[in-house]
Every structure is written in structure tokens, then in C-alpha cells.
Length: 278
Image (cartoon, rainbow, N blue to C red):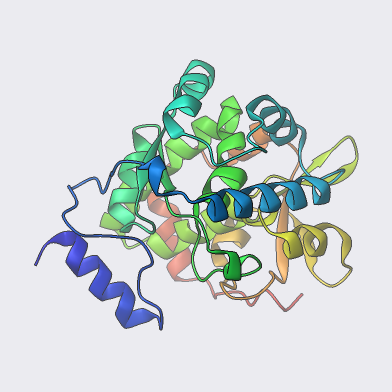
């Protein structure tokens, strides 16, 4: 059985929907071609409507680095061609985007990040999925993640995360590192000029979570603490009950720079935290 067949089988065993993308005949890196001809006018319309809705919701809620990069990219009129984006992205931070069928095995995902390559799902949701999809599509990957790759601090952070992920596999620390990714890259908040802003892709690409994370009084918003982040479980099918706030991207990079080897051992002796409890 090939690694892509095994991965699809493993995902299907853990979920009710299996994998959305096409995983046949893949190489070891899972990279495929972005066949732009497969996007229909209906797909383009979905992209334009998603983009327009999210852009309106982000006013006063997204961090400055995201706003600046998104304005420079300006793909409001249609699905982006990844090769065209790579020319700008590589010049800015020496990263490039690689097209993939969807979710990736952890080791493959970490390997791409370690090489300053960000995997972007090539399929886009269908019109009837406009408000909800079961796994990240191209709009989530591109709109949520790619603008932040133009930030030098976040670009370096993601590469370091990829390098750390490959090591965590060997040290049984993967669940702790997954929590760090979740509460920063996917659902992180930052304080800028005294106000909360979002930098996490899961917030920036979600019409409901962007309002909930920043405007709703319900969730906890706690100062970033590396140990607490790695102790805290997270929700994959609902809005988060706890968010962690950094004061700058430099702070995030500095606090996550040390070797995690001893930290993983210490965390094994600490209790897991329920994000719903204070």
C-alpha cells in the first residue's frame, strides 16, 4: 500500500467523510499540479463572494501585516494562480507555495514548512458549501495563511515550527506542538496599538469566528504562555473557548525558539487543561 493510500485509509478511519482531495499516484511530497482549467465559473463566483464577505468582516479586526499583504496581493477577482503568487512571495520572504490535494500526513507537512514551502489545497468548495466545509479548502489555505507568509517574523516562525515538528515525531511531543500551531498559526490573536487583532488563519478565513474571537464576551483571551498553550486542549468542530494573545511577532518567535526536548518531558507530568475552565 502506498503512503497516500495508507494516509487516506487512516483519515477515513478517524472521520465520517474521509479525504476530499484526489490522492492517487502521488509522490513522496504529495505535491501536484494546480490545473487551473478545472475551476468552473461557479468556483470563481464562490471565490469572489467568499473574498468579498471576508474582506468586509476583517475591517478593524485583522492585524496590520495581514492587511498590508492582502492589499498587495489583491485576488478579489478570481482564484489565484500559485505560480504568480510565488514570484512575489519568494522575493519577500524566500517562501513558495506548493499545490497539494488537501490534508497531509504530519511528516510531509512539517517537511514542507522546514523547507519554506507552504502547502495550499487546490480544490475550492462548491456553491452549496459556501458557509461550511468539512476540511480546509483553497480559500482557507490561501486567504488565511498566505498573507501572513509575507511577514518575515511569521515566515521564520513557520520554518522553525516545521523543523521542530520533524523532531517532535521522534520525541512523542507531537500533540504539544499541534496545540502550539493551533493557538498561534490557526487561532492566534495579537495586541496592536492597544487593540486586539487576529493573525490566525482559522479566524481570518472564518466569517463566524472573526466576530466571535474579537467581539464576543464569551471566550477567554489570555496572555501567551508557552507552557499553558501546550497544556490546553482545543476544539476542532466549534468556536474556540480560549485564545492566546501575543504582544508582537518578535515575542512569539523568541518564546518558541528554545529546544523543546526537555519541555516535552516536563509536559508529560503536567495535567491537560480544559479550555472552558478558568
